[in-house]
Length: 388
Length: 165
Image: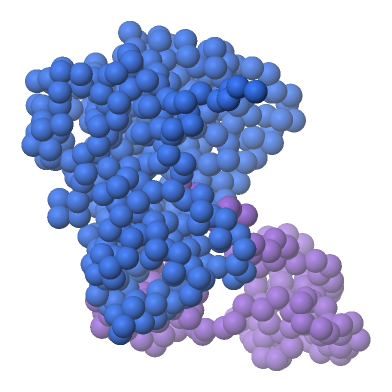
């Protein structure tokens, strides 16, 4: 029989967390700091709205781009937060999580061989999505010395005549890094100079702890060359609802919608109704969760200082990304050993790009009690390694 | 210390009184000495009135029950409700006592968990015979679903997958 599977897919690197995931499930009493989703339940008033939608029998497709009422709320929200005006009719599509938005954005813009610049460490699906769309991912390795921020010099050095777009995500998973206004300004000059498009995944925007999140779309002359992606998973603890959205100029969004229409039809209807409530009444929920995350963030950073574990201070998302290179192990070796010896799960930095191999990702989407115990085990582990 | 920081300390302690002052100081980015001083002064003011374990007694093995009693009373000239309240809350059997704003009764009394016989005995021989008490109405708690902001019905189990990107 022939081998039916497409070579492009076969050659895709498997996800770097699969192996660890299999081990974790074998061990009881693991404290997992490897979870990339909020530990909070979706706020009850939002769940209630989902239940109500079900009871009312709102179980049919919506229009391809999503419920009009939801698109209006999204535009209202983006305007309120970032002072950005989008047209709810022609510049928004509601997607199945931010993930789908990333996928359709890439597929809408990539011609075979186009280069997409993608700074690393970054979310695990960016590069595979670029490749699956026929593009060529060009990584820029970022480092803790620059607080994992992208500089204009780094960007300019990576640009070739085939470069079409830059794909960034701040606040960042896995590093927790953010980009402030003064970091974005020099980037914008380069982006405009080389006539690039920007895909910006701002799914963690609400989880910014120092200052306010700045969207690159709100920089002068950038809206028309930006695809802005956000969603409900992180800000409202709604991961399982699978709901996100993309905002883009009509002449680009039109084509993203085409892919969405043929591939997905419409995002889950019940989730869309719940999301309307989230945007209308969810500010206090965000506030409460942000404060809790921030307390845990400070708790971890302080613990790392005491452990003398080298770690830059993250200002966003819910991750810290300490440097483990002093132990002379790869991030995978370190994670596996930590899991086996102390029953603490973290994600090897290599899962987020080669340059992440000096680091591990630690999620603080868990309770202080868990963090306290995990820190105890981690510092015991680190001491042991240092004594060798 | 400003009210905002003070309330933040209280909010943390209310949820978890076992947090150390060092932990509170780190979590709120307030100096540890300031945290210590503030907690001490809130204790002195009796703003923080104690640190207790939060127990789901339904899980402890006993046949005791919780009761809530509505009391109708006749307030005393010149003394209002305070002197009657004292006659009630001084009993160790009484866990909480609230004067209510409206309705057809005045006090809500919550008793410490006890057997049915002990409760009946306390109500008839101690509460009902207080001079100013006009009537009592005793309610037995059947199931506690939530207390002190914690749901007792749902377990603590993490429903998430152990590792996700």
